[in-house]
Each structure stands twice: as C-alpha cells, then as structure tokens.
Image 1 (spheres, rainbow, N blue to C red):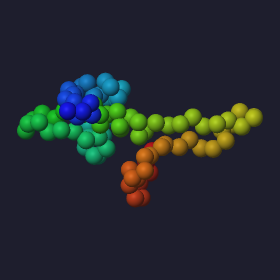
Image 2 (cartoon, rainbow, N blue to C red):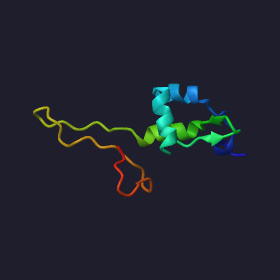
Image 3 (cartoon, one colour):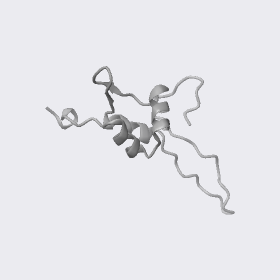
Length: 93
C-alpha cells in the first residue's frame, strides 16, 4: 500500500465545521449545494474525507492583489480554480 492509499480517519460534521471555521448552517449549505462531498456511512450518519476538505479550501484561496505605486489595487481579486474544475456559467467565487 502506498502512502497515498494509506488509511485515514474520516471527520464528523462538527470536526469539518471547525476545520473550515464555518457555522453549522454554512457547512450544511455547502453539503446541500454539492460543493463539498460527504460519505454516507449509514442511513443517518455522514462523514467527511479530510482530503476533500483540504481540496475545498485550496480551491477557494484568494491570491493577494499587487498594488500600484500609489497603493491602489492593480487588478481585481481573483479566485483560482484548478483546470477542469470549472462549471459552465457559474462564478467560482
């Protein structure tokens, strides 16, 4: 078994909420809207793969915008999206 296939521990919703620093309602919306995948382990229990949380956070990083000599932003902030993750007609931010 390679390191990428090594077993890992899934996180509860509460742990995932804390990892992202979001409220229960916000986390629920992310799951409901399909923005964050979850694993259904039983009829009433779902857990989150920590690799999915890390990917979610990485995909939503906002890069600093360079400043002009006068201190104004050179361009508008952008949200980076890895190639292939675009959804047609949907703003990634």
